Length: 187
Image (cartoon, rainbow, N blue to C red; front, side):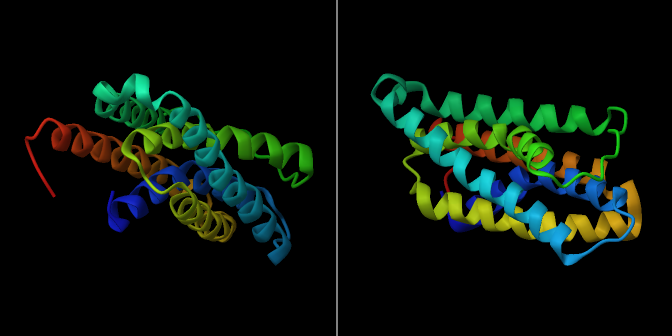
């Protein structure tokens, strides 16, 4: 996987955290740098950790799934992408201005479950996990911080767009992986 593809995966995975950050920014009456850093640390940290866990799980079973790993990669990325797009059309989430450990931990885990599945995909594709996960974590950190400020300034206008764009990116990368493995395209 090239750097550009990894960056696109990182941006795609970050869109859930970005959307939640927009909502968090909207909910805060008096926004401080502390709020943005807390959101960035939780979301970025879990987006770093979950692919690593997924990679270890996928690596343990790699010998079993090697012959159809491209279908797994395509399927997981497509499911995650379609789910993100579907969520973008659902009703708005309830705004919560709590930045406590319990709230942030639950949201960080919820927004990073898809990163666990991508980690399994990375094991199938023999992607170097630590630099890739670091890129995902840093990208998510930056977009979460940005999301807090955008939410505070502009409100919910960008939430649905972010989820749709992230879902589309993940689906397109899944299709590209499948087409490459089938020999239809090569990059």
